[in-house]
Image (cartoon, rainbow, N blue to C red; front, side, top):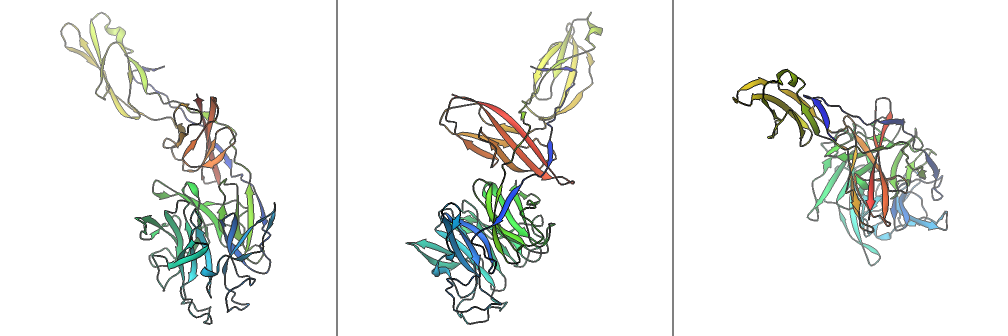
Length: 471
């Protein structure tokens, strides 16, 4: 259906924003393998268990230690039964040095490790408080059950620290923390991209993320999300956990995690499972560094609007035509897009959003002379202020369909999270996602969006739906 113009009239529709305070609730508790004597921190998932750093002395392979300066090693625990854990053990003697080892990160297959380590490890009896023995990043490859090919990261400088590495799920980017020159102060976050099987030059994440203090312990989650710890961004005190995301080449302002996870103590070293609902993090709220687990309630959206179709088709007529009804005339409409229509009342569809000018010329049909020129009217057409789901409307059983959350028409809103519901509840996903329907019928696909907090600390929520038919 087209809209009527009395020369040019149009209306704009807006999508209501559901603004609610951040309501994520977490159940947080210490893990059984965290002691009250030693320090445990920086958990990562590995082969059905957890790899973490600890200064506990059990199973230590080093020949030097003292109670004041205990060394950190890389430990491994696995699940035992429904709720128990095995006793922590050194991950591998091949990558255990006489100094500090860890934290670590693994590729998706678990056969490549990148980890922090003191650069100089030749003399196990040297002074471990020597501040000139900086941390570097090293890698190793698991071959026939042993870690081999231990080598330093491409970028290494004995004058500065390179530590807390984190690989992205696809292994094509590595994040780390360093105090190398050219940063914003303290430890800054950097990344290197892999190109032709080599690591590109380090890139500083910039002043949106890095502060004059310290940013470290990155965790690269899927969908391009990056979690990290900072004692320079505004938080509850000490190190706090934040997450950000790179959108169109720019990092969004860091989002502060829920108060159940962040405390007035140091909170850092987070890892999250594939459901986005469970994970682990480090905290010293019990006076030693401990690893806590957390689980969160699923995110819900209470009201969803049907995606509205943008309509650029209108009916045009001259409201003053009755004044010249006695003269045979031609009404010539010029729509500024290369199309001219003739008639007292015409329909025209503009190609899309943009600025347009419409001219009406009234011509004497007998002489061809111009009788009148209506004033040139200018207007700007815009898409409806909404998010929408870009996908086919019809799909096939057992054949994957692609869906994309398009947010370019949301003015003044910075989206941080995408949640998709294909009939089994909202689950976090990326801006683009695929889904396979296993039965014929009509389905309602829902897209929920969270945006950055406003000046009052309120997180904006939007939700749209789209009907899909599966044959």
